[in-house]
Amino acid sequence: MIKPLLCVTVLLATVIQLSAQDLTVKEFQKVAFKELKPLEKDGWKKNGTFILNVNQGALRNWAGGGEQNTLGFTTLLNYNINHRKGKITWTNYIDIALGFQNATSFGRFRKVDDRIDLTSKLGLQFSNQWYVALLANFNTQALAGYSYTDSGSTKISNFLTPGKILLSPGIDFRPDKSFSLFVSPITVRFIIKNDTDFYAIDKFGVPANHTNYTELGAFATAKYTKKITHWAYYNGRLDLFSNYKRNPKNVDVYFTNLVTMKFNKWLATNVSVDIVYDDDVLMKTQLKEVLGLGLTLKL
Image (cartoon, rainbow, N blue to C red):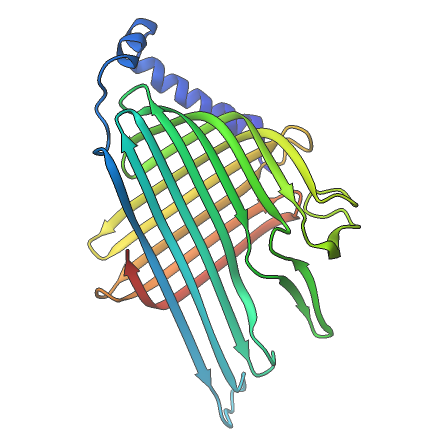
């Protein structure tokens, strides 16, 4: 799908080129040991967004046809907890989503969104925009997931099935508060298959009769937030991972986007678009789009 070494090489080349323009070896030594100008003040900083979208519909003797009753809701929590003390920074990102939809023909609620994604990054500043950092990420879902057909449903995933734990040392570039780029040529990722229903089969990249698999590869992640206008905001993140041990040319992609357009303090329209490609889970690009109108709170 994507040439991994090319992607990582381009990112590394950009980092090296920008660094070379700013610092010689002697200048680096001077900068590394002098007082640096932080992007943020020392102390704790917390902010985030909570979204609750609800939709409902009902039909009676409707000539155009359709579901008699529909009811659904989705929730989304994006929260940042950051701390800085001198040259040391600790940034934490929490991304949790859960949504359900019910219709007369379903007979019960069906899950339409489920995500638990936690990221923690410890950094040591050595230039005004550059950090040596250690990043950890945990990703899974809360509830079992099913594939639905006319004949019934089949379980295809569950909590910690898959689950992913990523540990990555690297270089972090933060030119301002709205953008960060982290690059690592050596990253360890653990894939977990905890549900016993899948123990005997090869799934999510974990071999049959195993509950976990360890990957070694290259990793890059970019995070960007933008205030488009005084009533519209964008929040995006792109993760790239290449597994050196298996099909390194097939880079795993996780790309999430959220646009919030506020009408007032409480009400907003939210558009989220997620693009995922994971060679071990499903060898095709996955796309999820959600448009909702509902309660939106700045935390």
